[in-house]
Image (tube, rainbow, N blue to C red; front, side, top):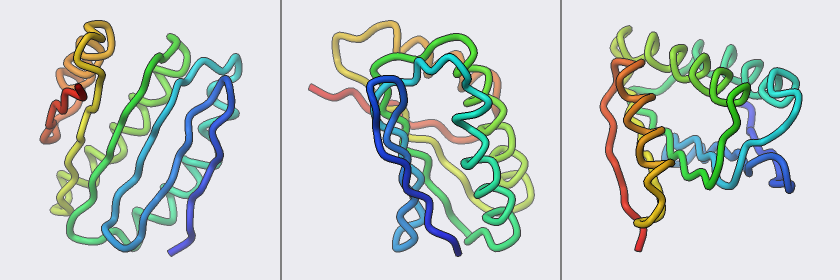
Length: 125
């Protein structure tokens, strides 16, 4: 399985797939002007991943901020994982947010309403 590793910038999050524990992590902020361009390599990786997906995958999403266009791209990606989950490959989302960040907590709940996958809400102190 091809490794996915995208470095964090001021506008984009660190994105990393850990093949040892089958965890895809988004960490930082997503406020890029061309979100589809940023998500293109992730979606290309996901096409390959879907063919060889293990029995369990975790999405760790720990964001400080997400703009509207990036939110749509993230939702589209999560919907692909939802399809994978419905095919019998277990997928869970760990939505990680700062304890005082009500906006990101609410965003996680919004995503949870839009995709049918297990969500864990992890409050960081």
